[in-house]
Length: 560
Image (cartoon, rainbow, N blue to C red; front, top):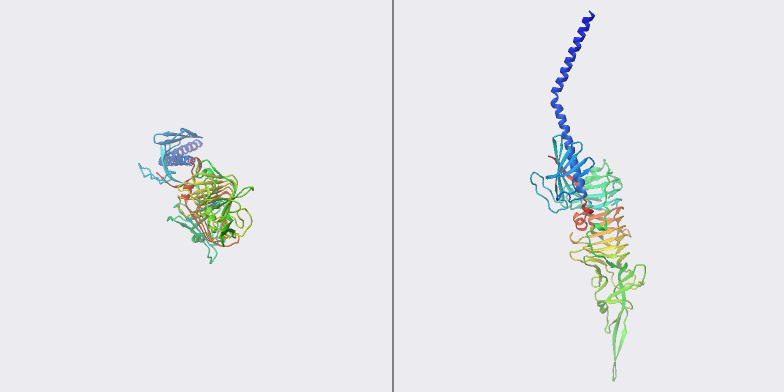
């Protein structure tokens, strides 16, 4: 009986084993396609990752040298860890040690003023952009990706700062852009707009495209963004956008690296520097003595002729006072002297040199008595080995002595008058200007730049100005209606527009790009601040990143 039970148990076990074996076999037969599909999906995913690796490799090479791929490839094969990249007849082949690979095709128009049409199944390439096609391959499976990347300008915002951007107290702030893809204000610190969220406010901030773009503006900050002193958050972001047409991108986890602009990055004449003596150059007055010829008839004798000095009259003069002290150099104009002459002529001032229309301080640096402007000419570098000040000698005569002016106060401007070329003024100390700066030129000061008026340019982008400061750029607009700066303004530290009497300006207009790399941007109380981002000025004034490096922005990609 016990043997029969054991035999029955054995039969049951054998039968169960057979059934289980058949079920497992059937499971694998039924799911064989699923397993194959899974392996294929895994291989396709690995192939896509290989293609993405190809795109990353291409972007790395292009950002190191924007001309890469425009002509024949050089320097291959290249080994980077487990990746080896070789040149082939159709482009580049990258191979990993684990068997993955990618093939690259580059159509590069970075830095070019024209694009390429679509050809041979490859996408069209807009100007100043690149299209990279990458095919990844793993175990016979392929995946293709195509990416369009555009070159980013040296500075991509109307205003960029590592410090606070403070627009509080201004009635209207408009941020315009002549770039179809971007209208930005950037700070790695806080941004304060005016009081746009207050109920019933009359203050406004608006982001406006001047080229018909529908892309809204962006206020980008690593810290908080405020409307006046109210933080913009999820509760009021919609209202803020509706009021400003700008997204408040606060508390960004990324760091925006504001490029540290060097003098070597500017498109300035590469000529031997002409030296201008450091010191103060100012327009003032000096005194000449008119002489009246008095003829007295005498009986039976020839008339008596007397030369009688008349009260002294003021004539224009320009004075140079050397830095560190020294005797002033005074120049006055022959025409101005003749204008105050009386019937007997005129006695010239006690000191000074008479010139005919123009006083020359250095080759290319002169003062024009007819326009009362300082002029800088020629495609050349002018260098001041110290500080440089140009202005009006308020209450000081030609010899530096106090006096009461008799002539109207002039605007003492600096004119870069070279036609079609740039003059570069390089100041090794501080620079101060009482007046406007106009024309096509570049001003650099290793320390601070201080304007007591504005830099006014009404020409097109063929005649822009660049202001580069190793310290602060300060504009004192006291007594002025407004300020206009056109071109590129770069301050290593702070940029500020102020009035010493707390008066309200009518308008501050900045066109081009404004950069305060290590400091803040602050404006005086103004009825209207108008900032316009125009990358054309950057193209005209700067060389871009050195050694053909370039920042790239991925714009779109597609699966092939």
